[in-house]
Image (cartoon, rainbow, N blue to C red):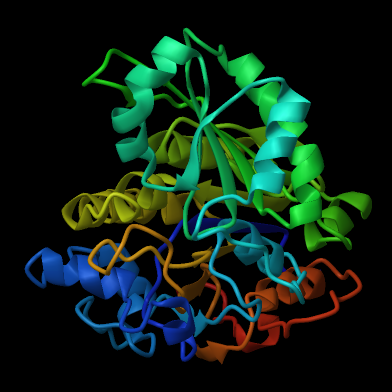
Length: 397
């Protein structure tokens, strides 16, 4: 076994430039990191990520270079022909989907909505693609008057159900989402998402009660292999929802980025070995999808300051991996995910000067690296980069 403990932090939606096939997705020219830095006047303010080597990754501009990066650095492209949370996380865990999830840019077909009425006993409002915050403002008052939940989608494979907590309490909304999840697998819908909100007309607010119900995945993820082999696997944030609550020893739910970072630090004191996997969703949910470039950069700067303190708590038996699951460029056209490269930073106190890891051809390289590190059978795809991480002599940090 290599490192005793691996910590993976997914900076949700931190893309670093359009993939070669981005034009097929309408995402030509997308660059989440570059866009937010340009919107901030060209000053990144990401000192920790810069020292780790973020600015040395091919295609990254505006972060700044260092001669001796603390981490090995590279970028990854998604092999699955998609750009959503579920496919990205599945691929990191060693599963590349041959058939991507279905999307509904023209709205849900009548067959799906007939099943919604039949299985839930409810009528609905809308059923088409929209921004979540905008559609609540537009239809929230009608929802209060009629009691009909608001159903909508986006460019991603999602079936979202929004309801005021006074009309449908969260637990009832979750039950309805589970009912929908049961028949939406047949339509290859990636996620059913509960979107509870509160407030009055003109001042509706989505709550932290969001819950994702993911497609039932086929095959065994590296997380499941780890758990089956007796290793602890801790999921922080929406990780449990993403992986359909499979392969996890502990699930820790969070209320935003700050709470997710706090919970990740707390996990260091409770989980001395195995895998800690964190998703920080605010970057995507609060800033990318809302075209808030300045808010995105400020949130990334806050993460960067926390990261500088966090790495001081790591030991020489820890491997920290920082990456993302897709892009969501707030300066690009629209409000949806963008098909981009994602960063790959691998840090350990005992590593030599960070090595270039190049362009990895699949997110599954993370899963393959986990399998190699913990002496598991390799997943069916991906190439481990564990051997490319060279150790320093003792005492040379």
